[in-house]
Length: 303
Length: 230
Image (cartoon, rainbow over all chains, first blue to last red; front, top):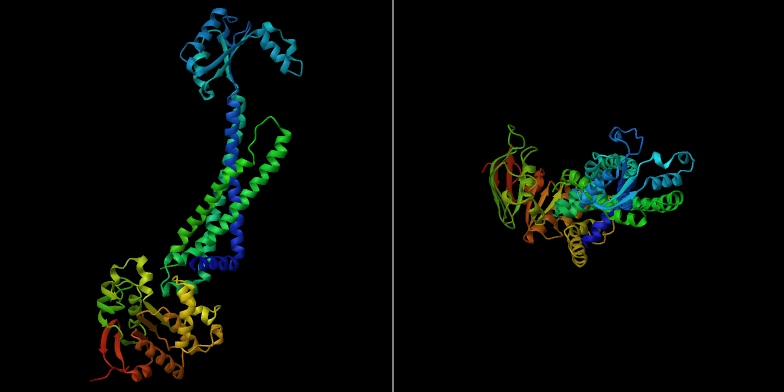
């Protein structure tokens, strides 16, 4: 009985205030799309980190014959120095952070460079111009700095480089994108709360007669307020559903079809990730509506 | 049934009190007129009983409840024991007569069966049988007030508060409404009616409580509207 009554009231309220309800739907739709996009971007960042950091190595470049680096003023790295460096990595203080050490000779370095170079410029070099390299695989890629500090000062080391630096730029960009999306989402969510507040207020005012009578004959405060709260919640949830649909279409066509088609070697987020985000979006929508109800209803449906 | 014990009500600090040290006791089954000019404190009196306002000083007891100590979530239960009728009827314009009365039961969670049983009975009692499907604007003022009374009484509350129920009606129609209220009173319901209508008060010869500037100036059994020098 009460449930049917409440549902009836919600339906009447939504129909009577259909334009306001629609605007609530649209604003929550846009704001939650931004929230979802931010979440998916972060998931993408995490996914890339997981995939790439496992593969990246720290490269310890050793001094070649005529290095321009000050720390190589002593000339090319000696075998003794190489052994000392290897000892630090494999037996020294950072050995527990190091997973594997691979020594690349001058000749191998040269071959690799030439192989990766399509312009042919590097083939003009001579293997003797280059230094050998220790490729170090870390047990925990995040611990790069510790390994770098332990090795960069050693004699015979020209430079320690982390391949992550290459990716970090991309991550910085993606993080910035996340912040922009989250910022826009915050503004839009504020707009959504204000709009839901207004909707509830209008609805409460237009049904003042009903609520006055309900109060008079002794219906409970929750029964008086529930229809208004639900009205906001229903509209906001509809917005969340649209946002989920939008994100789903976005990942389906933009990410899975278009991005995967153009840059295939990256592991992208997919539709299943949208489903991970979806319940949160609905929860946020309901939360926004609840927040709006909280600030409005006390004032407009007095008990 | 209703007891006000040295009750005062001040709305804004420093202003003249709307009610000043008023003590009244109304027994179960009483029919009481509450008279006095505008601003005498009649509305405040009714609002205190409905717990729309709280007294500044003194105690209010209604239907065995001490309203000063009644928590706000229990107020709806109090209101289910008090039917209220107003000068302006307060009907829902887009609902039929039947729906208007049924609404009062719906919103306190009564079952469909109870509604189907009680609403026609009540419409019969107030003399509106056959007009269930009319909308309020299709009824006369007297009929609209009957709908309002049916709505107030459909839950059979032990107390019926009427705030100027005949204020918008012509004398002939008013008599009909008073007969109806009298009938309801005879079922054992306590009726408290605020009014300006001296003719009605003089005719009915019921207990009269008169307020003037917030003071209780008269409490008389079988009284008339104007002050009688006994």
